[in-house]
Length: 258
Image 1 (cartoon, helix red, strand yellow):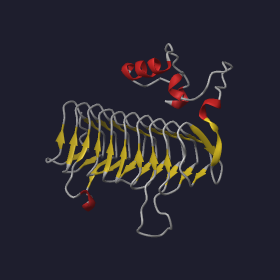
Image 2 (cartoon, rainbow, N blue to C red; image 1 turned 45 degrees about the vertical axis):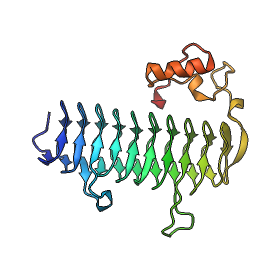
Image 3 (cartoon, one colour; image 1 turned 90 degrees about the vertical axis):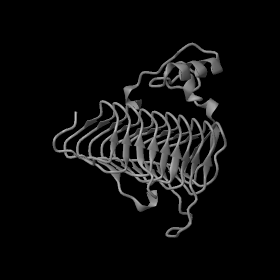
Image 4 (cartoon, rainbow, N blue to C red; image 1 turned 90 degrees about the horizontal axis):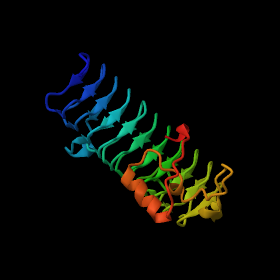
């Protein structure tokens, strides 16, 4: 399951049933869990002085697609999945079932919770704190320098269940609270209250999220999104969400949002 052109350090620790594609390099300071699949032309465990000797740890059942680079000094829970040409710097700490879209750039020194999803071309600045079940859509940028260029860094915080729509920018030190929605093409310079919608440049309050209706003719609220969108989440998580709202399972089926 290891392609003959792959270069794997004898010091790297690989779990059972690991597969490695052509021309991939796996450096010394790497721990891969069981049943991980690494695509072609990847660099896994790129040396990084700021990692201070910490290994790159990737949990069981992870999939890293071709041309991706992961630095040493980060830890990912089971079920990591990436698109192609992803870059992840040292100091990234992520939970289970993290999904990273093609051409994402994670600058490291950040934390990501469980079941969080990044679409393609997302940029995450250092010192970002991202919660559980967060959705970040294409071309979103989380910044960290309040007066660039400088050595001052103030990371962005996205709490659980936040959704940030495409081509939005969240400025340094901003907190987007639980369940909020940032509309497309927004520039967020102030904290966002829980369960509210903000949009614009600069972003301003639009309405409570509960006022947004699904455009499926049902008239049901679109938020909290976990009331109707459950695809890809484990049964125990879905059961908790449905019990929270007292509803039967109503899973969405739009494949573009996997």
